[in-house]
Length: 165
Image (spheres, rainbow, N blue to C red):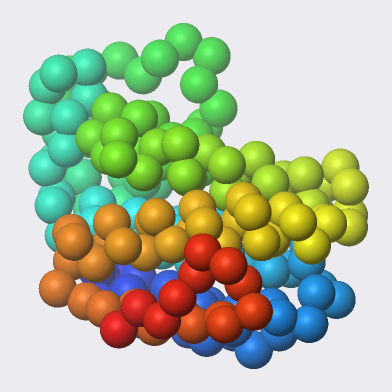
């Protein structure tokens, strides 16, 4: 599984890719998807760095969201009933219980990514400008505060997004 450094590198790779086409507004579905996956890598880097998170008020040892079932078993805890057995579902629980500062931003990115890929297929420019990029910025700034890393994403045409370095 990737280390925190590898997750940071992948997040920056995704941000650079996003920056390369985001301002043309022709590929908003992909902009939404790449923004969400950038956020995933930032969150995963923080999980890896912390290695100890809370679940139901008890500490669990974990390096990746996909390790959630093993971490619960080791801590003799049960997963929530009806939980989808996917890293996305595990990550959402970890965010909800440990990273409340970015919970809303992550949820918006996740929802809009699903909408762009499976519901609308075309994402309006306003969604990119008013939802995706501001929420991505929240995750980036939070990630920088948690990691000893700086992310660069600048896009002058999008209000609410500035150079972060």
